[in-house]
Image (cartoon, rainbow, N blue to C red; front, side, top):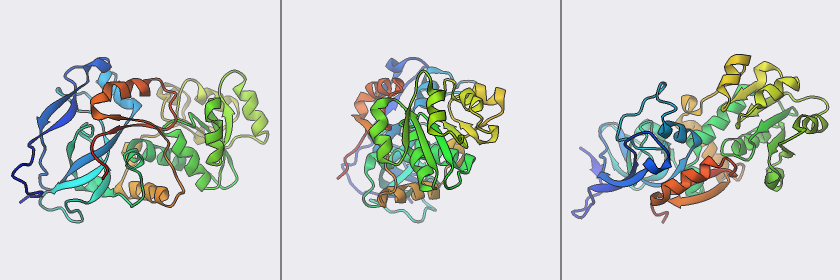
Length: 322
């Protein structure tokens, strides 16, 4: 038996992002689909917000086909926050109306409704903004995994490349929470924001190595690369130990030079989401939201992400917050 809202007027169709072949952003459409149902062990979530991620561009363009082929027509997205709209059999701990944070591994989050395994959800604490709640799976768990990978000690100097992006902006705060001194590599427009979360801004560009050496004459203990484009090699040139360099963006350099890569989805758990959400609720973490877009403007949202110069996250606002 499915425990769900009882309403003779309940809609049986909903809106969702779909694409039926690989290609540029124009292949994305928002279409009517059959509203999913919560099968055994699953929860139906009415989505309020869904963050989007650069990796989804690679999937949509076909760059991930060899590793993870797409079946068409395909949905899109993994991060979500919303309200429980139905509960399947053998699910405990969730009731209709509960506010939740979670993820789907089925490329389905960019939709009005999504059916999610109960083990991929956690409660949304009061006071955590919907857009930030919806940004915790890919960006939050990846930042968490990067910080864990370098195991910062209190007082150590750690540099973060792409420090104002979706992952980097969270990583710098997690590093500070562990007592590290953080050099945030980003553009000058992010200086004030980085300083506000306790990082020391270092602007990218020509002579970056000199600026990093001036900022840390005693040396840099670790580097987190959330951007790519040569930061792995630069870290090695600066004397950062190979075992304390981690990248989520330059896999070729990582394989060639023997540095670590991490994937947030591989380590994500509901308890990790809950820990990050509680940090937001306590005022110890904030996820900057560069912009929000309605579901129907999904193409414009991905165009913005593709610029690679946003501070924090781009989020689709799907449903009502109230």
